Image (cartoon, rainbow, N blue to C red; front, side, top):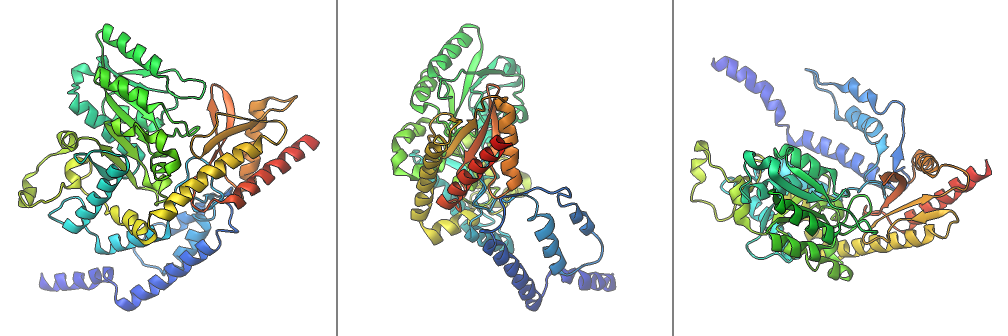
Length: 480
């Protein structure tokens, strides 16, 4: 047996490479990273391809090892060279993610040390760091000292955690599901519908509250629906409001909704995955006045803090509610009992094992400080206003609601063609050009083109380029 163990050890030690090998790999990866970043100014934001990276299948998993260089070459060709380039300043479709360079360093540090950030006993410093970030976000949202939260993989899991917490706090049992009522608008993010399904509440009553002319949830119609549902013996328990819808960046009237939720004792959730970190911009203070009244808030650092994908946050106004929903003990975890100065993330989350996400957020916030983040967000607001004004100067274009944040919708209205079909062709032409990537949406059967100015590398140069591309495409179409 000893001989067998030693034979296996010789092979298994290959998983722990020597410094010389690590330095070689580090150098190759650094060269790849620098080349990628240095070429972003000339790279397209979207690359269409018939192959769509199929050659990556040539590198399926096998017994034998190969060198790093061909793997990086294939990455460049088959991953970086097709589809949306999220790191490009020309990415203004959907809600772009960020990808700050220090975040990559943070992930590298977290992966090298492989700290288990789920339990305080296992990695007290890592848990303290993540909890410190949560407390900073709570203070940013003007939440009380008793508030707490969790770093999630994104807004979808954060919204799910909010709904499950509300379900437990309101003591909604399976026998109550058919009578339970959830209130939202048609502009709510589709992750809310996923959360309803995953949390077991598919049989609950969904009330889509009508919108006002600015596409905001109507408080008057909300309260009427709640009163009517109570009268009919139903159990209203959850209101979802948006601080920055994905479609248009619209902010629901939080102050009025908060008052209704308090009056009727409903859980009030604010999905601020996209818009929440605009709280850093003092110009928007009035819009955030009532967000502190929410029972829960979803934030996404991988949106408006420009952190890489996979970084979301749920904040709960009362940490006891989080513990009620998620805290659970196991026999094999008995060593940690009584040794925790901080709440362990695993005790307030669906995740037990989790990546040390905090490092990718903490490192850039400390290396840069808040000032450039605040400036970048304010810049995006002004760039969106600039585009909104300039696109209206081009004959034939109409716009949606005045942007409250950094998303706007617009479309061209041709004189003798179907407008929806024309704008579908226009967005396809913009995407085929590839220098700028935009997306589209459908609101009340009207096809709109969306611009979402969120990427930290998006500046005036990219907005002017977009306007120039649109002008040329329109002139080209009209002259055909």
